[in-house]
Image (tube, rainbow, N blue to C red):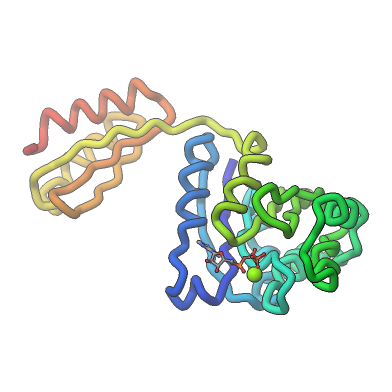
Length: 231
Ligand code: ATP
Ligand code: MG
């Protein structure tokens, strides 16, 4: 299952907020065997969100959107998602019931915004906060709209986590104490000999990340490299 993440937030683009939501979701989805293929960050602008949703929902099996769910005027994510999927943003019966049962915000006027979801959406309860999320199915993709507040986002993701599955990739790491450029031939040979991907991440030495869906091949390739690099 190929998945894209769409992070909404001016403050993320400005670097004021670090995109820990995308990092956390990347790890959680990968651990479940989903294949995270892209993360896109956009401002709190309805038209830009709509364009991104249109493109991503046509290319990936699932899109997870975070941020901009609240009741303030800068929270335009639901409207952007609805527009991008060519759906109306409607007073949603289930969302209305949810807000009534869950209590909503103290300022009741603010609750109007929470009742509006894209037509046909499934309401996702917000166990750690107020604003509900939504899941929308299209012919090609499933789109999930989650809050920006990390604790709320995580709890809501856990509600739908079982909907993400795939063949798990196994990973082994080999540390090499050589310049990256010197390792190129051995990396290429490992890739050719075994059914694995090999990523190389320089830092303190070079971290070679061997991954694949066949555990025996990953182990054999990692072993092959371990025997041939300076460590
Ligand atoms: P609320 O209902 O509280 O308005 P929201 O869903 O509208 O929540 P935002 O207003 O976009 O979410 O963000 C709320 C807070 O969550 C931000 O101030 C920021 O601290 C945090 N946050 C938002 N997006 C991210 C992100 N991608 N990674 C980490 N933290 C984030
Ligand atoms: Mg907000």
